[in-house]
Image (cartoon, rainbow, N blue to C red; front, side, top):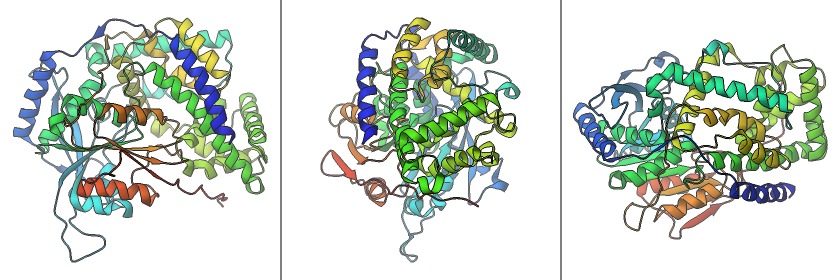
Length: 529
């Protein structure tokens, strides 16, 4: 296939780039004994206090038995009795109902805590997954628990700008930006970093992955669990890995779904370069699928012809935005989501086809920013930026960013510059940086852990799963072959779900350190009415 060949070319360039990409930055901070003691103090206090669950704020709009409560955690773990922030936690109690045998009562195994990633995503609605058939066995045995991490609304929400100014559309998305365009985006990145400092003040530095791991231990204690059962997806695998290294004696079972590379040298500048390279491969996968269904979408019978159709739409939107709010950047963002989830492929292909045939309504509906989403999107972006900027040193010289991404964009143009603009505030970040923890556990320090990965995941490239397995002794890797959906637990692949159920329900892992499942079927090419 052309996609692996392209990924190889981009990956080869990436390795050359990274070898010469220093990740300098402002002062770096190492966690000390005070934070270790503070985390212990906070956990003991949470165990004594517990969580009082009651109605959720939006419970009237939700199905099932979702309940909510709060847990207090220190803003700064070096001062555990100082300022506190409240994390909102959600729960659906174990059903005890065996979906295959209505007469059998399933014994409770404790709480299963979930984080969906980000940084900046909320897990408050996660427990509702227990209503789905794929999750019923797990929901019978576990209280399903989600929470909004620090900074994510409503858990002491972080903001960097007025949400009313967050959606800037229509806007451009040049794959080979001019020098004047770069200067404009640099100014925006500087202003955004200043906005984060202005809104958060001295609290800004405390939004980081090490504190997210400490918060997770406080949530464990508040739930009354001696040891944690946890499932993290995407970014959730990173601070889950930090947790495993920081609190190995508190781990019962851990699932890492769509694992992020935890190598300190990769966090976060180099991980984002690797992600941009991987998205080019996934973009090709999508275009090849569309080309195979040219009889349905009429966008071209080769991946190259499909790309020309996309470029034609982008050029047309640059000249005349659809609905006055959808320009090339909005188009690119919409199709980037198809790189995460192939269930989006039919919808995006039909929207593009309709637009080129003079019917823009579907494209506007799928792509255009919605005012009612602005506050949540601004909050999520603020947390994402704060955590990644705080977590590690970043290059502070624009010339490094420009050199590395100009090289990469020659073979991986689809996401490269969009990723730069997303992360560039980290070059001008006003808060001290953490030094990433070197995640490693030795034999016997952890119980077996389970890593799940799609072989062609672009958002969390497969190398991250391999690296995490090397670093966590006793971990087992299950790979969904020739698939690229970001996050595979509890999806349509019965083989993957079989390994997940065996691990969470029985503590069983494959006898060998790795196992594989055939990829899920491709999405069907369909047209909506």
